[in-house]
Image 1 (cartoon, rainbow, N blue to C red):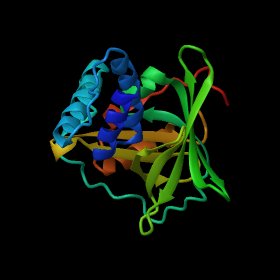
Image 2 (tube, rainbow, N blue to C red; image 1 turned 180 degrees about the horizontal axis):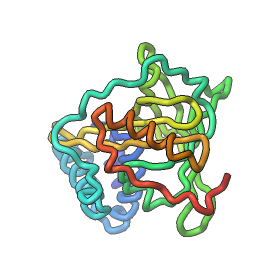
Image 3 (tube, rainbow, N blue to C red; image 1 turned 90 degrees about the vertical axis):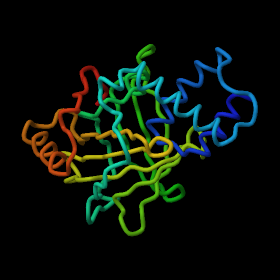
Length: 240
């Protein structure tokens, strides 16, 4: 447990996004088996080196450079959607297109984000995907809170499995609450020397029309995002 505990302390020093956290959780399992993670309590410098090296390994080994997910400098300032209504957004959102995400390719396919509400738990999401090896549907659940003044800025924390130090935020850039939604996440690497961007085109139908896709991409382009980085997801043989 010492290597994983030390690593989780590093995550606390540098809060990571869901994307990075899932990717790193896969990487840490591999490196823990190889005895590559430190067993001593890490300091700030060790954490910075560890997280940066793991990220670069994932981006390099997973095709990150080719997928152009790594950008220079800090995150661009892109405003969230005005007047976003979390209750109207509830439901099953299929992933139609996205920027390159290494962990999704490793974990499986048929990704779905279920936005849910429960009186006891409040708002939360259940992220479903089909495992490559077994074909079974797997999932994790994240508790959600919405910014008081900008509700389209969404903060999440991993609840099931319960890993409260794995948390982050993303924002909804645009949606009509049915045919399309644009969700965007930007995470800065230590010291702000580089950042990663992920843009998701989501829909409540698995096969949105050409006009719907055109509208979503036009909005993303108008916000300064590079829609040429979109990768269409194969939704054949996916559950309804």
